[in-house]
Figure 1 (cartoon, rainbow, N blue to C red):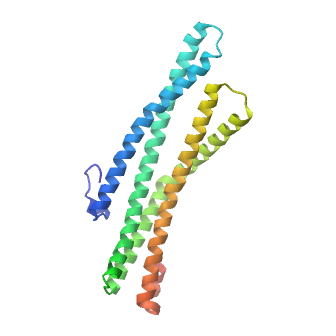
Figure 2: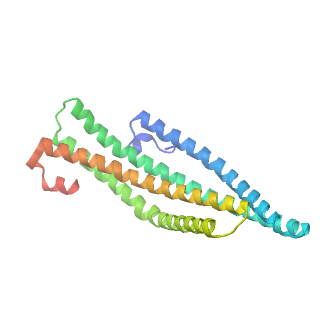
Figure 3: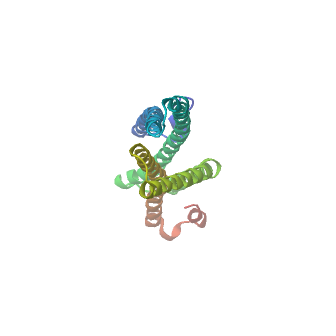
Length: 233
């Protein structure tokens, strides 16, 4: 949709305000990714050069070993950061897109309630089918794309953050290395919390839509809900 290959309507977006919100957040996220992808390797190289400069006895060791090593570390961190940030950015965009779709169901029910309109069987079938389609989409994203990737990312960052925390508390290191370890720990915990919060926000929004849908089904139809509708809900 953002590239213009498909229309917003074809993926279930009809609210202009939500479309603009998605595009605005995506633009901000892409800008932050570009800035972070270039600042992080520069800081890593600077810290590496500063730390190595304090430990070399002769200047030629620093020139022939310290500087090349710092440059290699900077390039490695640059590509690793790009790989990680862009994947997490697209994960956030997909989650935000799914949240909007769940919100649209809630909004349609609220419009009916506020307008004191009668909820018909056709409208109920439409809502239930829409809800099931979104859940199938969530299931598809989870099983085919994100579950295994996020497992390894979260496991890696949790291990890295705990390792950095252990080094920071129990190891005797110089100021530059301590700064690098603290920075790595903070970034790791922030990314870990960001991924968990983003994924859980879909479950929270889905639960809100489910409760609203189920409560109004019971309110308007009571025991007249068919077994097939109950299974779908």
